[in-house]
Image (cartoon, rainbow, N blue to C red; front, top):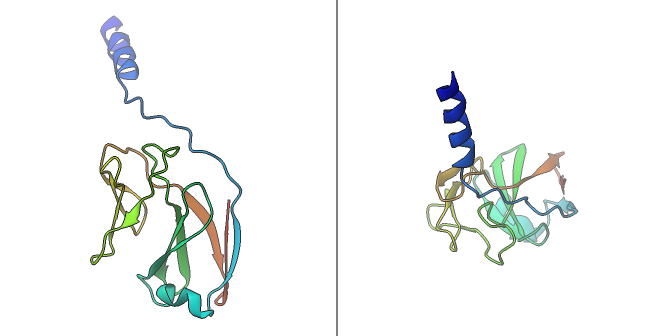
Length: 135
């Protein structure tokens, strides 16, 4: 039994020390998606960058009725000035140029480290014309 406790303690001590607390900022955006400036997110799979959040916001249209908004600050080191970017032309992978971590645009999950947490996601509500992004 002592070996089990020792093993658990060793595992806790050896855990990755990438436990940044993601900075909390107020996000409260209201967008009228029929405006020409939102042409890039008119169809599912479209994305665009917006101002706001810690490092900016990546807005992704998942389907006709759903948008996803991620903070562009990497979860590996959110206080750095580095912003994640969508890898073109595939538009599926999000790259962190500083840590070389990669994330999937459809859910923000990590597909290559050293990041071990998905991208910070903000709440979205879409009524067919208006989109609210908030925390």
